Image (cartoon, rainbow, N blue to C red; front, side, top):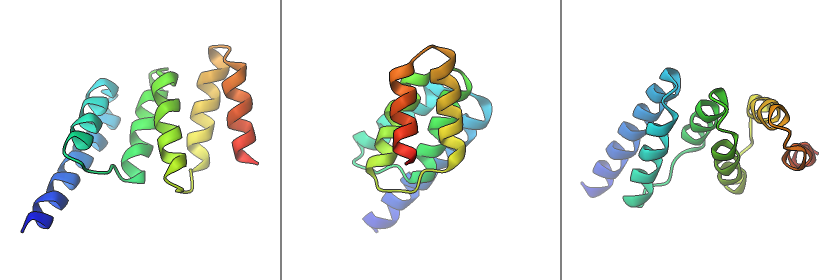
Length: 107
């Protein structure tokens, strides 16, 4: 029964994150991710992907890079779209160091 509750919590929070991504509510996404971690729940790769997109869309590149690092460390294949969003953001803000690191991680 406890496992079913954990799965339900994970799915509910992931659904909320997905809705926030579509609505551009990146602050709420970060709160939901924090809530997940507080409940000892691991965000899925898709959940992190949506969080990265939401942060990137509103030029919150620092948050997006932090989430990207978490996604990369999970050994999950990172979709090319994520790299594209991140590269556009760090380039826009003149963050050459981060741009080079992203490009190197593609190799």
